[in-house]
Image 1 (cartoon, rainbow, N blue to C red):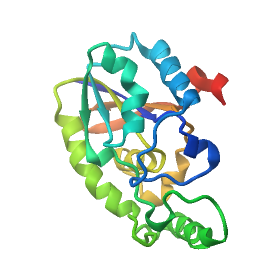
Image 2 (cartoon, one colour):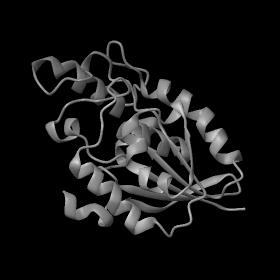
Image 3 (cartoon, one colour):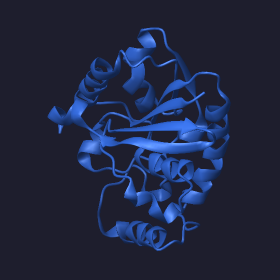
Length: 204
């Protein structure tokens, strides 16, 4: 049977607003605007018929889908959905020390996806922990599923789902609580909605 997958990024945090790098090691909470985005998404998709919701181990993803949790939908955490670790740059804002950060991003775009920031993960590292999650997603009996994850993790996940090279991950833009919808049928994922933000456009 065909699966319908709704993939969203978490709502806004103060670190998002301030341009501070979060990553896997910074467990920040939604700010007031992020809570509003969460409610607006719930209002728009409360009748979508979600049977199950997957979130990362970071609380900003659970807080984003909390209105659905309160309605009784089963929530499951999975480390495969955690954001990439940005290593020594987590908790930091842009500055002279970010030269290496941007060098790494450039290397990824050129195809050197094994590169990582000191103390952090590469896209390949993230993909490896996402493969276990994808196996769970494919085999779970529920067919209408919401996933809440993080910006870079989503880009990597979309490339893996669509069998694309990870150097293409920047082809998948996102904003807080933007939505990608995919169908999964006969072993193939297809995108049916691309970076939809209409439900939260008033919050930007």
